Image (cartoon, rainbow, N blue to C red):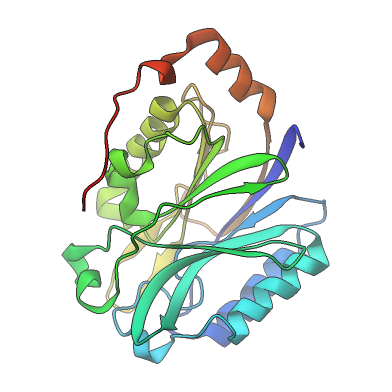
Length: 260
């Protein structure tokens, strides 16, 4: 088990529906990271932006972007995570892919498709929660709109780190800030959110606000607003152990089951 986990958050603009250029841009950004890190996190739909025409950019799990993630992960000896459009069995998925240096791939399909933008009309909703183990840490993978639904992320698995990748727009950014902190507090875990910046072809503006909170809700990142930047943060397993051993709040959580 590794007590310290070093995470690189890449807050970036995205080129609309251009996987090749987006991969090229992220390759340059990742090469600029001069120190060793354990996890590199990219935004939601990092190859395309938040597109409702998945047929223009969809790839398979054997496609170029997955191979690119594998290659980067192997070369940097770090996991690489972010979501992209995947075509599988006649359906399109907004899929979080977590590529590990040993070649292992873990995936999570976004459960809460964003009905306000019609995502539910073109993407198939995921059915399974995804909690993975990496370097002795239990990590829960989530995508954007999932942030609004605390039951889905409720920490029944004693995970240590909750990850959201997003294309979260400016008009509702205060909700993003508030809910990321709330998810950390209620689940007594680290919570990191990676949002994009820039403007897409639909005139949606994205202000960043990527952040990482500890298990008591303290923000550990600097002011990540509006600009492309890379933030590297170290988190510590003993923080999670100490606050849970001290406060025991998770012992009092409600029992429930999901039926949908």
